[in-house]
Image 1 (cartoon, rainbow, N blue to C red):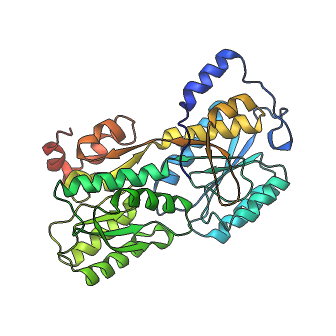
Image 2 (cartoon, one colour; image 1 turned 120 degrees about the vertical axis):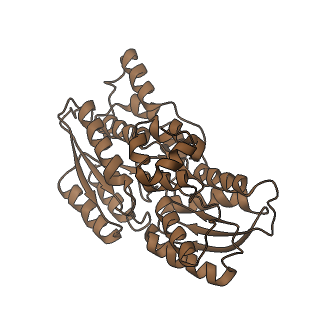
Length: 368
C-alpha cells in the first residue's frame, strides 16, 4: 500500500469550503446523519503510554479542536489501552454501548479489533482509523505517510555512514511491534533504501514497542555480531532508540554508531543535540490531530463535501480497498533541523531542550 496523492492542508480546506458555503452539505445513512448538530460525542481510543505523544499531544489537541469546531458543545470521550488489545476491545464496546456519535480508533492490534469495528458499523457508529490502519469496515483513515517515515530514516542513516558505505557495513534493525501495521510500513520503507547497500546483520520485531524489549534485542545483537562490528542501528522510534543506547553503553561502547528514531520525543531531541542519537523523524502531531478532529466532526454532522475534501488519498487494508484517507507528510530531524521543526512548531522551547546538561551542546550547534 502506497500513497496515491497528497491532500491539501486541512485548515486551508476548511476555510475555503466555508467561503464556498458548503459546510452544511448533508450526508446519507446512519453513519453520517445530517441532523447532528454541535452536541456530538467523539470517542477517542489511543493505544499506549510508552510513547508520551498520545497523552501529551494527540488527546489534548483533538479535544481542543473538537470543542472549537462545535462551539464548545461537543466532547471527546477518551480511553487509553496501555498496549492491551483486550482492554481496548472492552473500551470500544463501552463506547458503542454509550452510543458515541463517532469513534477515532488508534488500534493496539489492528487485526484483533476488527470485530469491534464491525459492531460499531452495525450500530450506525462511524469509525475513523487514527494513526494506525485498523482492519474491518472503517469509514476513513488518517496517518502520516508511514513508508516515507522508513525511507527518511534509512536515507538519513546512509548519509550518516558517508560516501564509503558498502555491503560490508553491518546494520541492526530494531523494528516496531508486529501487531502494529504502521511498523510493517516503516520497515518496508526502510528496507527499500537499505537493501543492497548495507548488510542487515540482525533484525527484530519488537513486542509492544517497549524500550526494555529493544534493549534486550540489542544486547542479543551485540553478543552475536560484536560491539565493534555494528556500523549503525535502525531503531524505528525514539523510545526504542533509548533502549538501544542503553544496551550499547552497557556493553562498553563509548563511540555510539548512528542510531535512528521517530516521534521527536524530548529526550530524543536532547540525545540528537548531544550526538548520542543521530536523528529522529518529526511528525506534526498538531496537523494530524486537528485534521482527525475535523474529519470526525464533519463526518458525524453529515458534511459530506467537506469530508471528501479532507480525505483525498486512498489506501487499502487487509480487509477493505480504497479507504478514504489523509496522509500527512514527515520531516527528518537532525541537529541542523531542530529549530525549523519542533521549536518553530511550538512543540518545545529552547529552554525545554537546552537544560543544564545540554546547554554546552546546544551552544555548539547555535541553539539558544
